[in-house]
Length: 60
Image (cartoon, rainbow, N blue to C red):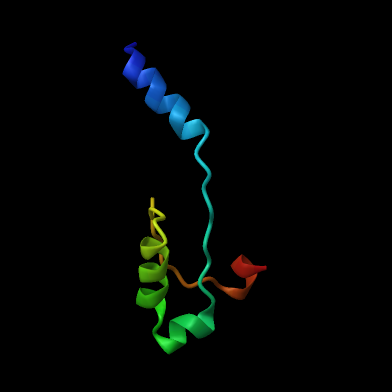
């Protein structure tokens, strides 16, 4: 295994990650784009994005 490969794997282990959940009222107001723009302008990187509607059971 190359040293750079090991470095990238170790770097991933020590990176802080945050889960962001956008509440239904923000979705209803149509401000998802503004929220994403604010995050990116703050210099944060969005590593993944999943949009789905949860049932009450899933949310609980």
